[in-house]
Image 1: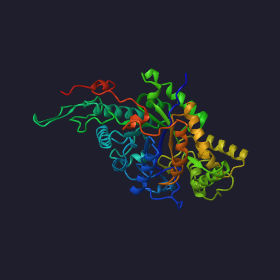
Image 2: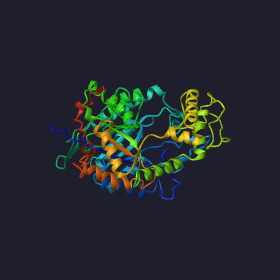
Image 3: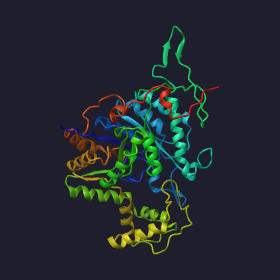
Image 4: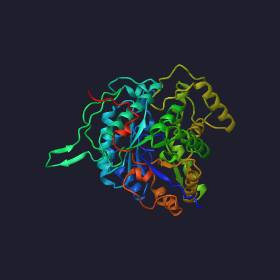
Length: 456
């Protein structure tokens, strides 16, 4: 009996504020003009990709009181961009990152339900948490959430959002013009969030928008197994990917879930060339653009906690010891939070053994795999990862906006289609159709995870 090939799932990541973004490259366009978003989304849909992925930045990261060098490109609000893209695409999934620490369930549930209705069932919510007080200073609580409580709040927020989506039956819109009835009355009160009143948006074509999650700690993996439809993984090398894949998938049976109910999609970059040597040289040039000399020094300063601008980025690592008490030199999600002393010791040993300069070391420790080679080689590798359970596909992260994936979509995707590993046409209208995910059951029976109380 022939075992059918696993289908590769692919998404297109809009670079924006990102450690891969090379905004100074002459071929790089605007990060905020709608034409940039539209080009990537239309190109991805033409290639039959599963979705367009847009990250979120609630505050620009700072280093020594100045904006971090890759954050200067700007970032519009996620949901209006996705709503605009819904109007210029027909089948492509639309994935938006919205923080669970600084938002309220009623508002987020309404926004994603609206996007799902307007797009014909293509909405997805990438759940992220943040314990960061620097980011939290922008919000009315004026602070943050203790690290250990971030997933607790996220789980409750998602449970309430699901209850709100389930507060409508699929046939709740009556549209009875003669009887004067349009919808059924619904109300919900949860044990923690005080959400009262009729939820104003009907259940969308997908029942629930698809849920993405990106946490990697043990707590984050448990949350993903219990909650997510897709994990946005950072484990992009083969053996690391297989270990992560197995670890997360093995958590599913105890939660009553099938293995194929959760897709694992690592972020990855692709650099192509006519030959392996061409591609390797192009990848080397790109990494040097992504890690400038001042950028390499700033990266080390996050760990050392002291000013290192006197050091040559093409010279040896600093000979001074880290300041373990200085945690404020960098603020935002790039801030280093581990004990710097063992990190510094390990980096010094590696730099000495491999004869690496500061910049070489930073490039080495910040590289996360990726595919480099001819289109045939890259297609072979993507297919190998999926067929051998190192992932269910990839979220492709280009380094240029908006044309950074043009060559991949034009050459690698057709090769995957020839192998029978990637769709030639969409099988259905919704993102759940693209990902092979079940539609959640309708009605209040689907909200058993939330200890609902009747409205008195």
